[in-house]
Length: 458
Image (cartoon, rainbow, N blue to C red; front, side):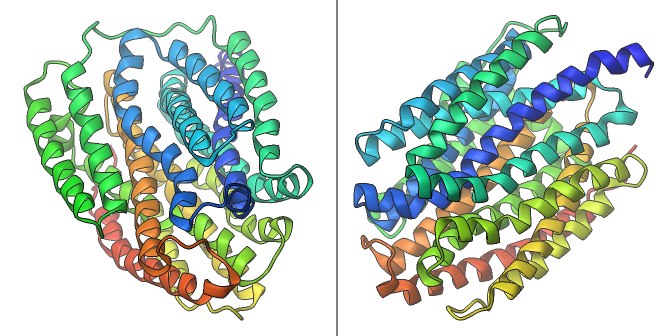
């Protein structure tokens, strides 16, 4: 890459990194403010979990269709639209008069965030050459981890100073600044558009399947929850059959069947995010309720994991340009397994040193897995499939995160019912948390197998 090309590409990376920072920053900051939200709206623990679940469910439903739509009508256009939607509904969230209005705003926030994320990775992959892709994706992921790093601490301070609304107040101007960067740095970016056919039928079927499975899974102790979950599985089967017959599908069944490296890398991503995302949600409540820490102090503990992630991601991303990324990612998932096993033994009197050690191991595992695995996915496909590859990768991430929260919500519901989390039932909450770590420790084992068996990169 010559000097003029580098100068042209850096503003693109800067823009995507800033946008990539906001979404995880908000997720981490909102997790810290959950006890304050619960107190403000007097809601149950199960309803409280939907402050996170509604955002993720919306993400999971729209990511895959939007990745295809962006390929057709322009990724930059969808990136800017996602920023606008995210910023508007972030501001409206701060003025929520009820918990249900807040959940509705989070749904729209999730849709906007999906548009940003799926287009950012595709834009970077197309802009930079293959030999620079690992480090560029690593830097973009480092921005994600920087958001996760600052989120708990800053979110804790904002919650103590301004209440739970403070998080939304601060993210709104960040969104406006991101819009300005996108307008300045991406307007003249020339990108090819795909054929003007959009799979409407497949999109509707996919959305219904995801909603039924995820929402039903969270309510599976009820009869209607079982019916919805089974319906979601059946609808997903119909979706796969339909996509095999589509000329320009939103989900490439043939790509998943014929490209072992692409498929196994995505399966590993699904399992890794499912095994880890609920940890921040659960530990935020554990530290503030069971350990009695303030939002600020809880944030200081939780910050260890994403800081290690942010430091290690660029290095492992660069390393994956030289060494087979599958090997690095497999080692990262093994470290994740060790941390989950360690967290299984948490007690109400566990030391903060022990907790932070487990979070450091988890952060290193995450940093070693994500950048190389993303590089492996994007390097396994041709340029014409960058959009759908980025979309499927993002969908696996968000679907895994949603599954993680679904299991956490179900366990809390089984142990606490409709009661809010408090010091009086902290032992029951701790039991539900331990079951979560046991389940996902076991899930990591097939995840490591998929990661190891993906095959060598070309």
